[in-house]
Length: 316
Image (cartoon, one colour):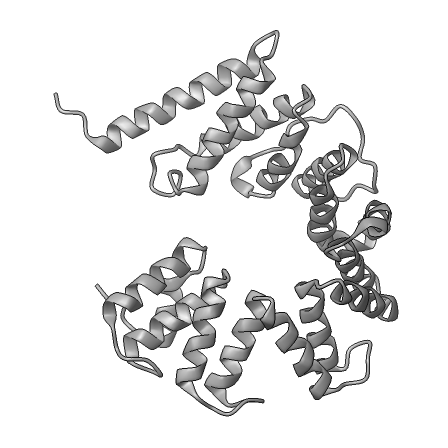
């Protein structure tokens, strides 16, 4: 009997899940070994094994339960990936926690469990835990905003990149304090934070919380782009492509789209792929177009759906 590579890979995946289940249920628990198994499963999910059927859908539940057991056994670095996985609906029902939420609970059990993980991470000294609490908590800022600010406040005293101050600005804006949000973004931008620069571009461009000023908005946009901010680079590309605010020039636009794509903007990669396919601003090149479209898809962009909307056929 010949065993195909796909079958062998599936068998290996099943063995990995079985071992993770065994270790999760073991007493005493080998938390370090369990963490390693979970990170192996997580890595396979990231590379797409679940999408193509090598990993069964049960992998998400096995992963979450394993991460939770390892985290509760003292592997504090696991709180962050556990929280991120809990936000995926494929993870199933979150495991029971041994302590209550340190913030007002809502009716979204998965969201609250993820937020609790980020609180745990922050409590063990992870700045990223506080930032993720603020980022994910935007969905429920009315009840967790004050707690997010409390987590961020001590980090602002030593904030060389301005990230804690930037996230404070995001939370304050969502809580309705635009003046304080602008002040935070200005302080973060002064520290070189490109996200804060981009927020100031948006605020000045729309006249939200500050007087509308296109000149200042453009200055902040260019400063963010100088730091390779993906959205800033994309906006400049789109402005050149449409002639809105910049001279219309598709060749220049293509250069900015490429910079944005290389900075991690999947829509920019998809747009550049279409430009290469159609010969808009760049020489027509189906092979190069396919490469950019594949990159956009790898980054989670719905390439086929977008091409359908444009009425463009994907290169073979």
